[in-house]
Each structure stands twice: as structure tokens, then as C-alpha cells.
Image (cartoon, rainbow, N blue to C red; front, top):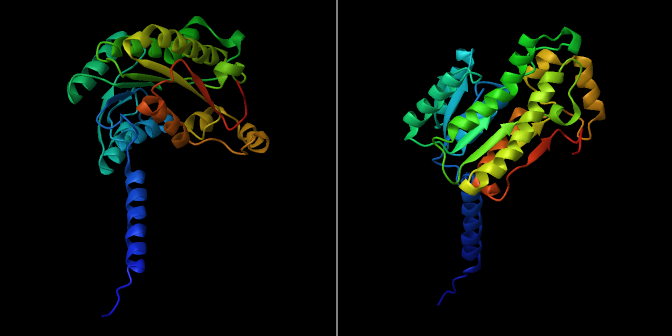
Length: 280
């Protein structure tokens, strides 16, 4: 009787089993992201776009907020829908209480009544002015954009967010080091956001809501294309431990981690993401 060698068959089955394990691991969504509802302020481009797309790729249903540039918001929406994600866009100036109220009502209405994740990303340097060049109108414009927006949105989302919710604030390295020339009010706004993160972590923790912040350094975005001199960017490439700028997708990965159940015992943090340029 001819003997059957089972060794090659066993090897084949073992190899196939490993393939299935790797394939399943690669497709696995982040813990407790799939099916959640997320609002991303300033979500139409750069870091906001990357965050919106990352959350959607992990199975979240995303409300992409924009203020002025509807075309960019539609591009982000199309990218998400084309990849099989679920999202809407919603225009709102998040420095205005009435428009913030409408934004969150729209998101809740579109996705079933509750909101699980808020990413306070709206902000910007607006321009560079020394203190002698700043007036009260400028002060309010920059500070409102970078901190009042965070305060308004955090206050409003609590109408729709229950236990297990997560808020992630996009602060800045400027909150740590005071920012570059002419960006003092921007830096103060981002520092206020960082302090608010800690205050809200204490206040909202007993309700099961986590609040964290990320502090990006120089990230390859429109922000630095517009407001940072090329020579300064080149200097960073030479001096930064990682010898490069960051990418918006790298910030998005950190934000998504903080929004997910993978970080369910993390709250009140301000995590630096700057390639080693500044340690805090």
C-alpha cells in the first residue's frame, strides 16, 4: 500500500493559516472606532482632511466641517466616499455660537442622534504681526479662531456625547515654545487649548469622556507653505533629529489613536509630534 506523506500538506495548511491571520490583522479596525460618529472642525484640508479620511477609513461616520472653502470640503468628501466611507460636509464658522449649534445638530441628525468623537482642528496663524502691529480686532480674530472655537465646540458636543466619548484638540508646538516671530496670539490660543484639555479631562472624566491634545511641530501643510519661510524649513530639515518635516497623515494616525478605545486610559495629555525638535 502506497504511503501518503502528510508533511507537505501540513506545511501548506500552516502557511495558509498564517496568511489569513495577517490579512485579518491588516483589515482590523481600531478598537471602538467603527460605527462611531465624529465631527472634525476645519476638516476640509491638510491635517483636518487627513484626520477625516483616517477616521472614515477606520469605520467612523464623519461630519467634515468647513468655513469658507466648499470646494476643498467636497474634495475630502469625495475621497472618503470613493474609498467606501461615510461622511457629510457642513459649513459653519466655529467662532460663532449659533453656527456651532447648527453644526452639531446637523451631524447628530444625519447620523442617528449622538456624537462620539470631536476633533477640534479649526485654527491658524492668520498672519504674522509684532505686538506693536496688533490691535484689538486682530487679537479677537486670532484668539477666537484658535481657542474660542475649541471652547464653543466642546460645550456644544456635550449635548450629544455620552460615556465613551473622546475629544481630541489640535494644539501646537507653539503652545510649548511661544511660536515664531509675529505669532504670539496664535501661540497663546494654542496654549489655552492645551490648558483647556487638562481642565476638561478633569471635569468630563467622571462622565466617561476623555479629552486629549496633540501638539504638532512643522508639518507639511498649506499653513507652513503660506507662513513659514523656505529657509526656515530647510534649517529644520538639517537640525531635526528625524531630518524632515512631518506629514498630515502622521498627525492623523495619532489623533485616531487618541479617539479610539486603544487609548481608553489616556486623558489630559498633550502629545508632541514634531520629529524630536522639542521635548516636553
